[in-house]
Length: 312
Length: 307
Image 1 (cartoon, rainbow over the protein chains, first blue to last red):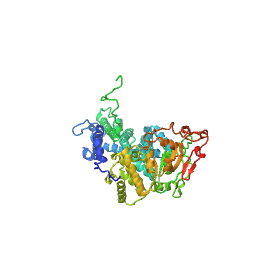
Image 2 (image 1 turned 180 degrees about the horizontal axis):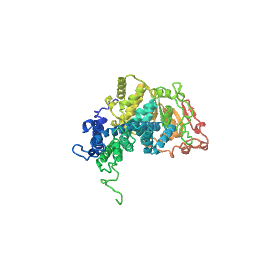
Image 3 (image 1 turned 45 degrees about the vertical axis):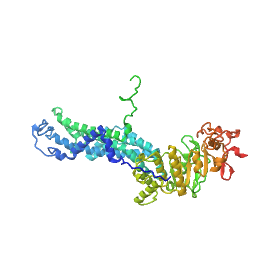
Image 4 (image 1 turned 90 degrees about the vertical axis):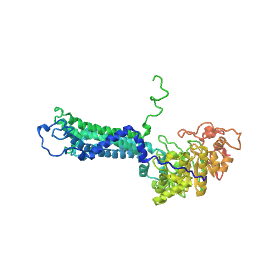
């Protein structure tokens, strides 16, 4: 046997370009990404985009309170005579910051607990998963309300609380994936090489759990944004940070409804829907891109199917 | 070895010697403990399995008495393994080169990053793969190439012993022949001691110096390859050979052995082969046959050899 097997190596379809190629074809994911990018750009360029400074001190007359949308103020004014559009643009910053950082905390805790429980098994797994179960059955909202009420309401605390409440689903998901991956032959091979647990987790388990984590991160971001809005709406956020939930809270408690000022309520509401929808679409699209097996099988019942079940 | 629930003895009474440069064939039906035996040599049994007694002597050291860290040093550096089914034994998300390098880095076979890369290229060249392909992923390799890559990986740290666990399953006949030829060449060139697990008696006759025939987790017969093929003493070995086609008897009928290997939870009380043995006697059902030595280098466990 001396013949060397030669063939020209085709350029690998892996890496970012290959991923983008598949990603582009998923409409849902592209729309989601577009929505999210729009929101991020708005938040980044808030000072340039906002027509007024929402924190500037202005003289307010009685006509300014809940002023209808006009050429100067496209989305009208709120109860303090501030421009709603400007508040809305600045408010996106808080939602995004809380969404990203809280989901990072959730994903980190959930990922570590899931991988450790799944990989080590036995008593460690039992302990960690029972703890997860306990956290899972405690209703999130009352728990967050209690913790926020006990701590000082600040942006950091809100992020922290949302982060440490939202990791349970991730932990369960990651654990099950870890259980599946650790039984694969290459893990046994890695052991035969003499590799230790840390090496196996980092080199063999994590890369195969990562797609799941990425998808989960995007989905959790939307949950965190929703949570933040809920807390702000309930008046549990830092009153000096301007967020969409806060805007809703002010509008709700300060008589926007009875004044008929729908623009004050609808604007932040639509903003929240936009962000959450964007994240969900992106997350689900990513899931389809990263895990092609989720797509309907070509043999599954469908309009293009040759044979149909009796009675169809 | 203990499976959960009731203790099931998967392997008992097995002993063999592997000399430097020797190729030992391990044969037996599926489920008779061949892979379990190989994994216990490396102490890699699944968590439900345990080695309750015995010795694995490697250059005078008992591997079973080493600490986990010391054992990790022995793995691959001294005893490497070619796994059954190369596709599953390779991680799909890393390049072949990186995975071969994994062992080299683990054991500091060479220090420098550049040298690791050189060593990987050299290994791939040795098994007949274009070294440029070390940056490709397992799915870009054909089945035969993956198996070659596995062989390259096994040789990465210049081990003294290579365990080849059915290295040619799931490959077509032509590729099987190529892989076997490659293994034989490398074995000779590097003076490796090889534990060759296989179902293929033809391969055993071709490659091995001695043969261990296993049945139901015990030694049926252990002898050099000529004795096994020309003067087998154990009825199981005889039946196994009759069930294999032989070119010198092209008209000879192939026979199968009726029945199945015993389940570990329901082992027969006497000889494990007794229910299927053509020469079964009354005492075979009651008494476990000891290992007889028809000649100093020949072991067989059968009551027939008593007289």
